[in-house]
Length: 413
Image 1 (cartoon, rainbow, N blue to C red):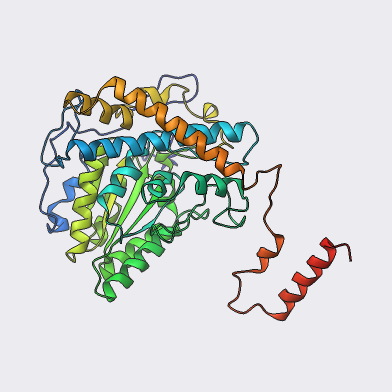
Image 2 (image 1 turned 180 degrees about the horizontal axis):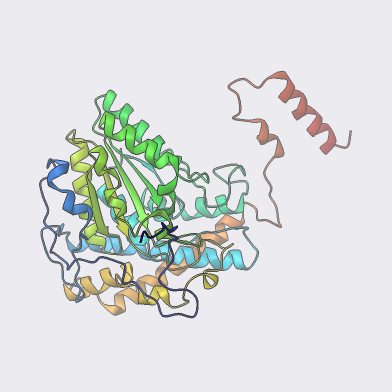
């Protein structure tokens, strides 16, 4: 008797009111995955896309070949930036809930990705981020005031009121503008890296998308071009388990690791503990070295968890257990690095609390300054005439005419 085919519908392992279930996650013991040479052939390192590169174990000890052996100062730098990212996010989330900005997105639980990767890359490398990489902007020199002003769309807004809040950019920091059209940054990164190779530079590009975006055509187009032209680029997939309200299995994450998506094209994949600061740093350094030596692209899957809502427009209690974040087996990236530093004698609970207090004051001071440049309800306000700028190299007569008519209306003529 023949059995009929049946449509397979991916479903999350737990819904609201149920016990969190992460049994679908394949984990590897810390230090158990080998670290090959960065010029290894893709066919020889396929296992790196299936295992999980981890350095910090459950007792916060650093183990294995992927340990980057960062000194105490570097560890403290990383911890400080991650904490600043979290404190900033908490403040901005509260500000949005008070109705003082219109929209915000937190990076809760994903701070190690932006900071560790930012530290592993060089200043000349170009970054094409997604919308939870605010820590990368901070690390690359964008001030808190400027980021806040962008969310306020005020007179100091770097985007001059033309972008959704949190869509930052930084020319001086080599960080491309965030795109609300998910996935577009991937082909951009590949193309920029191709240009760098054509010019004979050793600068590379890096880009980030979420697990859900791997279903977009841009993701696959980027991988194809990167593979064919051996573009010196790091393509990161931040697998935080949820794409808005859609479980990562909908993007086929339960079929095979996202890190394996490029193997058919000859792109090596690294599956990394995204909440392990040391593992993220080390894997990024490995991929960057490979790219600079002419080894082409690397696809890195960063296994993490979105600790908060997708955005201030989202209510995750509608689609997942409320305590799922606390049950995530890879823990909190900040707490893990903190405990490792304490174990190594580089940190203490008292120093940690003092630093948090200092960062709260820093963020509070930045908010006071940002408000001076205008808020949603109080001036000063952006000049509406700027909407005609930066569209053409030379403003055409029809736009100049519109600008004049607008000014006449403002003057009551």
